[in-house]
Amino acid sequence: MFRKVLVANRGEIAVRVMRTLREMGIATVAVYSDADKDALHVRMADEAVHLGPAPSRESYLVVDKIVAACKQTGAEAVHPGYGFLSEKAELPRALRAAGITFIGPDPEAMDAMGYKTTARARMIAAGVPVVPGADAEDFDTLALEASRIGFPVMIKAAGGGGGKGMRAVHAEADLRAAFERAQSEARSAFGDDHVYVEKLIVEPRHVEIQVLGDQHGQVVHLFERDCSIQRRNQKVLEETPSPAKVRTDDLIARMGEVAVRAAKAVGYHSAGTCEFLLAPDGSFYFLEMNTRLQVEHPVTELLTGIDLVREQVRIAAGEPLGYTQQDVQARGHAIQCRIYAEDPATNFMPSPGRIELLRTPSGPGVRDDSGAYEGCEIPSFYDPLVSKLCVWAPTRAEAIAKMRRALSEYVVGGIRTNLPFHLALLGQEHFVEGTYDTGFIGRHEATLLTGGSTLDRAESMAIAAAVARAIADDRQAKAAARDAMSAGSGAPAMSAWRIGSLSRLG
Image (cartoon, rainbow, N blue to C red; front, side):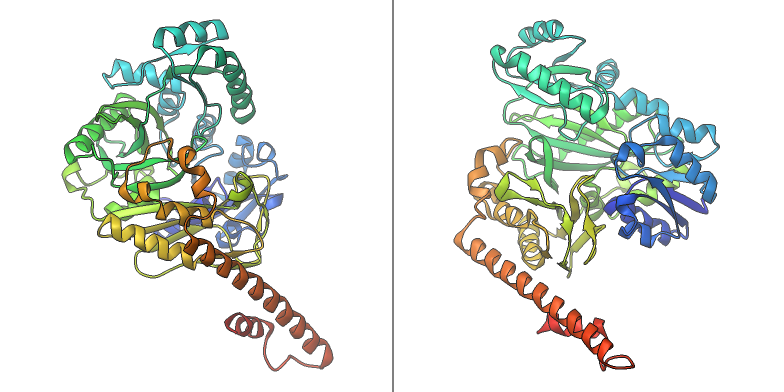
């Protein structure tokens, strides 16, 4: 087993990975940019290495700097988290050349599955059902293939994900403009403007299957996650099991078998996710494989009791899984809400800044994965994710009730967040019934952005008032403490920390 691991990421995922490493008795190394010098992941690590300026292309995305940080600190392995270099085969290749272990799949598997057009071809050869589509080197080829497939179609970036470089096209007249926008966005996000076209499945659900494979040929799946609640092709809420009416244990077993077959087709080991479109008639189609840990992995951990990061580390160290598909059991229901520093009232514009007040929920069945703390800055250079709030309960109805309770306890002052949006979403009739698809937010956006019911708005106003009052009290208490310190020759009767704590309670 490794003695020291470098985590080549930031924010909540770096913190989450470090927690498991610490439980395993493994020393941790953080990396950080100028914008993250005071970040929580830097404070938590045993060592930290500065990478450079705030822009990720000058810090977190520079492979040579990651390798140099490993050599400087003696880190034997690198965990990439998600985003940044997690799906770039250049990193594991460079680490391999330096004699450092990559906690993830081999670069050859990443090449095979990380580029969507290549992955489609490999999956077709392996007998995996894929959405009808075709590669497109230029607009004329794309237009020809779109006409052959039939509208509506979806244009997608070949070299990335996260909703970037994706455009739905419902009529031929809109094709060129969508092609140019998708290319431009893909070039900006991934440095690669290659796109392809596929059939747009009407009213689908986005359902993915988590897989784990070791270096000895054993691969299992850990059931599904329903990621259909999306805004502009970006996931907002995930849950497992899927509440789809067509969902049966047999359907998930078949999807799981396909995902395992896909992983074995490329000799995949580590944690990975096969994403599928699930049609209203129960048919499903392979979309892509994410060759990394997913943002939404906590709901699978809550469902199965398996720590995916621990498994990634064990697999990278050459250990066998030690269990079979029959040993993996699902229990209860889990939901994750992504809490972002963004303002739903202004079309979800990012809201970077200093967190003046932070009160996170807790209690039975509540998990909050976060890289934030009171007083920290949410920088404008990166994804504005504050935390991932997760709950587990024996049933979906209980999980929804628990999440609503947890959201109502969550208080963030100093920046705007999408907490009111999530409260409205969890109270929306069709969501509660489980009758949603990937177009759900677009159809109900007007209702969801008002904060939901009158009660929800009243609750939100009360929380906002409490936050404002607490911030004012906190500032007043700190000023009083400073005055007390300057007035006397010694320490005040109560510390600034104690005064501040009491002011919050008052």
